[in-house]
Length: 380
Image (cartoon, rainbow, N blue to C red; front, side):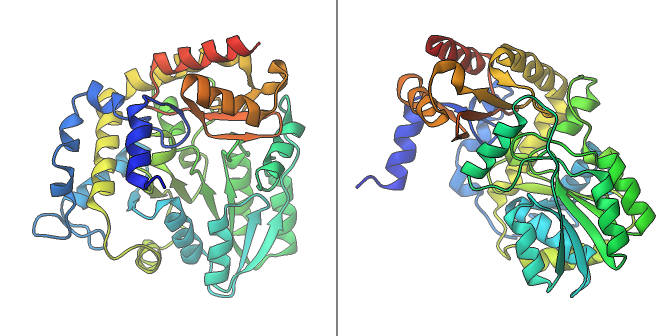
């Protein structure tokens, strides 16, 4: 029987091309900008709260400085570093914004962690349905969602939130995912206006959109705006999904004064590990350094690379999610995925129905995109 370490070694030795999470896509982006030294003596850097290392829950030193850098990067008053993924951020956001036994309006395609927060807080959920989305292939995206075991893939309409806010005036907050797993975005600005009028907080699960702020910062068109600038109160970003930090690292951003930061910190202490990984925290530092020092180059290259795959992808609100129509190849998504794996060492994120989801990231190279395009052209 193959053991885990053997599998990981063999996979890495095979020079795989990643079109799945995480967003760093391997060593290339770290080597390119001179950060490969971090990976030497890795075990020696796996430490605990020794003097000088700060404390994640009482940040006054190096971790506090890193959290302030993320607040500056996202243009928000306060950020928290997460080592239990966006799941921890969502749990903490909901528990802080909704009193025990209170009501939460949640999107029908909410992540499992939202439902976990409802259970943990004894919260009464009110579900807002997602709407059909007006993009090519929307009905097949919804079908793919169902095949993959996810809820409907559409957006949340401000009008539906308003209707439920009027029917449930005692609701404390609204939470929805935007962009969702397949890159569909909701009208965050419109929903934020409804929430303000109703006296509710707005929590945006932006786990799949941690990159959006930086395309906008660099004036790159064709990408939806980040929730941080659209009126959301709390925004959770999985920096590992599309940016360069390691899996299970993320950031929670407080954008307004509508939610008490002390309540957020208390909730984070309930749901996060008391032994936070300094390797995950260090990867958040690496990610910040790449964005701060090389963001203009990396995000412009990313946008240019996406154009190579445009002929094969359905149009999504967030074009970093490549939804490939496999009917053009006369195959199912699963068959196409298997061929990419076996013939080209290309590993997509997901196959479902006749669609293939290739998730791009900040660390993808031009060669990765050229290899995927060449492989898809060979199937036609």
